[in-house]
Image (cartoon, rainbow, N blue to C red; front, top):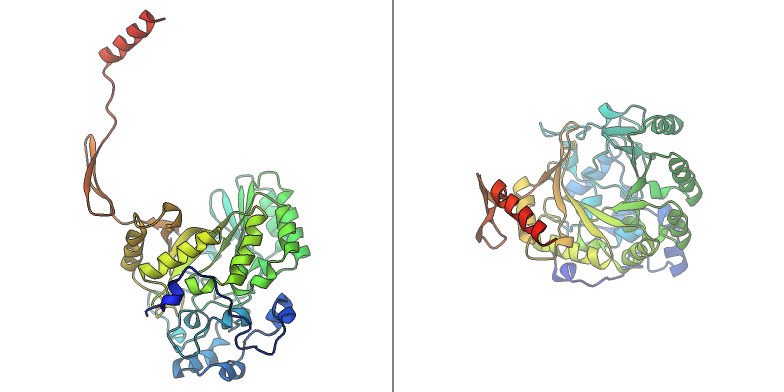
Amino acid sequence: MASRPTDLAPSFISHAPGHWPEVEAEQWNDPRWQLRNRIDSLAELETRLTLTDEERAGVLLAGNKLAMSITPHFFNLIDPEDPDCPIRRQVIPNINEGWTAPEEMADPCGEDSHMPVPGLVHRYPDRVLFLVTDRCASYCRYCTRSRVVSGVGEQHLDTQMEAAFRYLERTPEVRDVLLSGGDPLLFSDDKLDKILTRLRSIPHIQFVRIGSRIPIFLPQRITPELCAMLKKHHPLFISIHTNHPRELTSEVRDALGRLADAGIPLGNQSVLLNGINDHVEIQKALVHKLLMCRVRPYYLYQCDLITGSSHLRTSVTKGLDIIEGLRGHTTGYAIPQFVIDGPGGGGKIPLNPEYVITREPGRVILRNYEGGVFEYAEPTVIPEDVLSGLHDRALETA
């Protein structure tokens, strides 16, 4: 799918009020209004869009797997005339979700098998994933945790908060905690403050991260009050999730600016998605806009083998080609690390184009982004007689 030129332009556009012309600015900018007015039913969706047969059937089946929910802010980014719109395909269900490919899994990252207590995933030696909620402002159709997120699947998230805190307190090797879910920024300022305060009371936890798509789905939530509260808990990092340059509106830019002004380092995690962002020019436009929002592109994920995701997954080769199309053609700060989460619980595995042609004794043969070939000599050991002579010369000049 080819993006329009305006999608790739470095400008930040407001789409408000879009489908809600009757709504006053004060309402529109109220995150509670946004949440109360999410599109979450077929009837409401059909009043605003003409659905394809595949979409309508997908919405009818969505209540059995992963709920549909779209904030008005994000819904306004959808092109109502284009069924291949990259925003539309991320959040509107499709009948293809109902088919499970042979390679797909309910828990592709093996999180359930790495939970010492319910809701706390300890897969890496020094860091944990703390699933504090199963709700999001909107639901991505490729969600890695669709088995537990949104509350309509067969499995339910049963996080035991106090047991998780006790585990962290007695596990001194844990120095890094990632709050995720669901989306932690859906919590009230007070509830989130209490969680962060409890984590900060554990001496060996050095820094805390929050994974959130709220700045994209619900930028109105990023209030000065929230930022002031978060600022108390440094070092605190936030990883946002943006897949397409159209998602970076002026409201999103301003929300991210408030977080950056609070001293919070921001990184972005994208998922490589078929027909949505699997093209080097789309990725380049995205990473350039992210840097203008003071967000460092961090990861580009190969889409996990989540149940019902085959229509949204693309090849690993495309991801490698995108990285090669960025390396050398834009600033290094703009280039994310392409990774696959090893199916079944292998953790993140970095993937890079092959720039090492051969490795030989004493040298490495490399190629650069233009295809030029270069030889890099490995370190040569200084001969003993030369080293002795240098010592003698040093003594003579003392």
